[in-house]
View 1: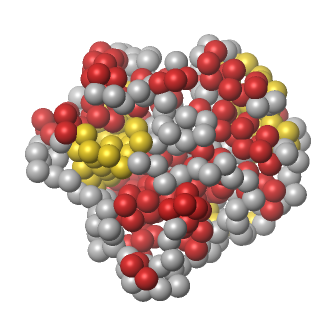
View 2: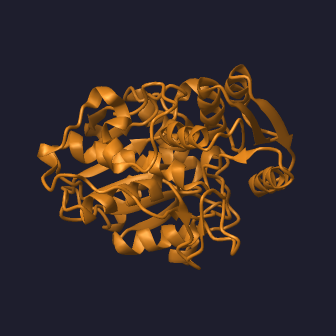
Length: 358
């Protein structure tokens, strides 16, 4: 479970980032014990921990999370992965179960994180499940429904005025002052080991076939990069024969990846309703750009009006999601219009958070 820096090679037993300020990764990750995935002993009743042989973290904290439904979405000519049916109502539970399990392995008794809502609710809930204290830094204008979930899990809440980056900086200051173990969904590699399980589930649910493309919301990249690492691990193990095309959906005005790849963005037009991905300075930017390149993917920005219209379509079709979810199916339409995705391509779109939190 030791960590290493892919930039400078430094190795640590535990640290939230390298001394060179680069994100860390696990020094070693497990490989499957069988060459044929159909021979693997995978039991969906174990949730995402059915894939524990592929994870460098042991299960200590769990609420039965994972193995979410993969359902047809004819109105989009795609398949939706219903990531909003987790215990706390978002895919962030994938990372919460693994990061809190690692915290317990390390003997931690207090965790700290910064969040716009969903990650904070997940970390607070799983900390409560594991008997750990938690403190969550949130934007001052965070939705009360998300703060309520954090508070009811017994976590302390610190509201911070300013941008989402100001919230992170305030949290990091507290961590560096010794105020707890940084259970960061943006920095900690244990969180990404949890989100990688979405990739394992998708191919297992599809009898080990790989979709042509995944279209996912992209802020800090916990879902996007986790999915890439999951598919890459399966590819390296010989369990799949290719990577899907990884296509990101950002919010206009908060779209550093789309801006890096395209020069036709209206940077002064802001999508404020996709609050879960309002990130201008993603921690894992280098790794995400590499994932986009290796998967022959792309990233585009989605406007507020397109997000709102897509949210209405989702609700009318029975998918009761929060607004941030809608950027991915909205981006799917745009990718088809641009010819990035053909009409007959096999596409999976994860829906990341529940509308019950609104």
